[in-house]
Length: 119
Image (cartoon, rainbow, N blue to C red):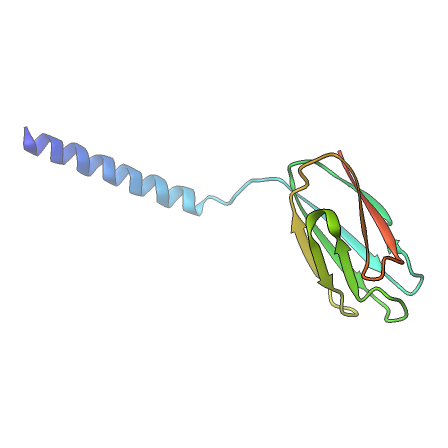
């Protein structure tokens, strides 16, 4: 009887290990959304506004291509994002938009602005 329990335990343990190994090798299929925003010498973000879907992780890459403006920082207050934007070095931020609506992003001086629209 004891031998039977040990066999069942060993088989169950082996099955758990195999399942864990297979799931560790399976890449995640979670959807993500990506947006690229450029800030050039014309003092506007391109695109100035964009749409995101609720509850799906968003990656936004900002690229500042000129030092002729006040765009040294990017702020997305709704999501607590505040990052430096060096010239010609992409900076990627990520967050999960949890609620619908329009949310601002701007340079550190709030002079150059854009809008994130979450559906």
